[in-house]
Length: 159
Image 1 (tube, rainbow, N blue to C red):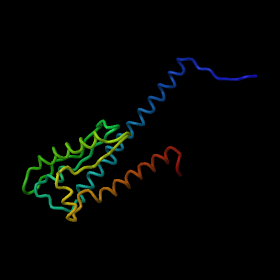
Image 2: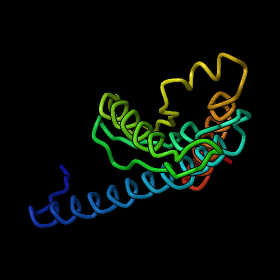
Image 3: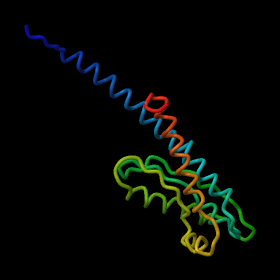
Image 4: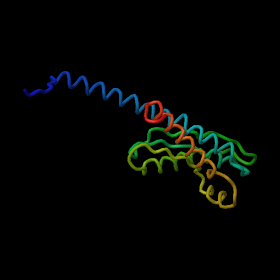
């Protein structure tokens, strides 16, 4: 005797609807986690642990993040006005956002979170031995690994 299962088009569409809704919730959780938990903390870390003198406030103000998916920008954040003794920091915010958006648009497939210091002299400051983003890179990697481990444990893949 042969056996098989059969589903109506309506039942199949209901299943697809449930799957689409679940995928949507997972994607929203990913975006929230990358923006708030990982991106926001990494930017705060970079601004707090940068051991350089920011005379104008531009360099710290240019530190922020971009979150993109498949080269489409989802969110740009973390760019805040930080005053220095010799400036008004307006250039830092605009340069940081501009640079973040350029990188976000040229990102590859999937989700991409990029932390930037958008002033053109950020690399020079790092080369002089000061921390702008270098220490934040290892912090960011540890944060992402912690989030991935927590998600895998909650999903039952790790103990």
